Image (cartoon, rainbow, N blue to C red; front, top):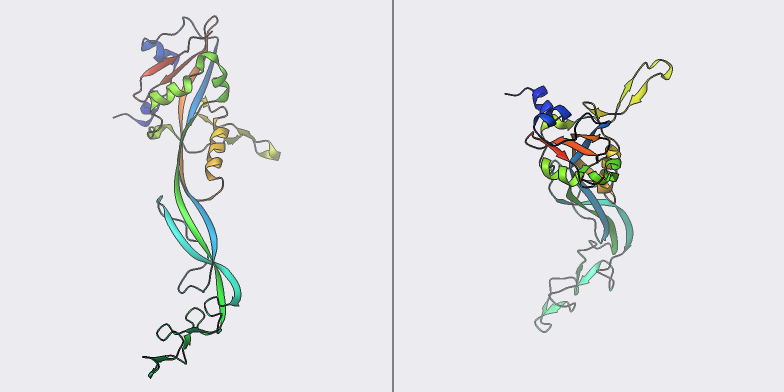
Length: 278
């Protein structure tokens, strides 16, 4: 059984392991090597949207305020009392405020061609909408919808995408590492905020860029944050589960050759990419 260090080493590319696997690389040592990562972000969200509507009567046994945070990532609908909308004439009893015409006798007060009195009050009954007050206690209701959303994206450092021989590196890596499936847990990034190094005496500490075991994120963290912000735009995110993973690769230069990239696929096999454009 592999230890954590052994499993991690399987996915950290080196030029030595690439050459040992008989992949084709230019001879000699590269003139320049960058240790970079493809950042993978997999996220689940609950986006909450709402709209309001005036109800003609105060609903019974209805809660006020925003619904609680959901406990799952399923779709849910809620209705809550937002506020009182003030009173006004009851729209159901404009003819005689507080009363409606009896539906049994049609307002005549008698039945069977006038031979028997109706049980109503002279052809009218108390308005059920306003309970006889003649006014309407209107209420502003708010309807909430909790909608699940997902983000499953891989982010390549921008400057790599400007290298002609590496134009298709991102899509090729995405396919080789099957980035939509959860990566190995050993590739998980639990903190991308950087760390403080040096002495904190009189502000002497400085923030050090985060890295993944010596592999640099480039601008992928900023790109992923922009993607996450876009997911939440126009709604309130009330629940989320965000997981980030790093997939390391080497970008290498040899004089007289196009740039190459070396990485390890999902099965732990070294891969070399070069589009062949000088």
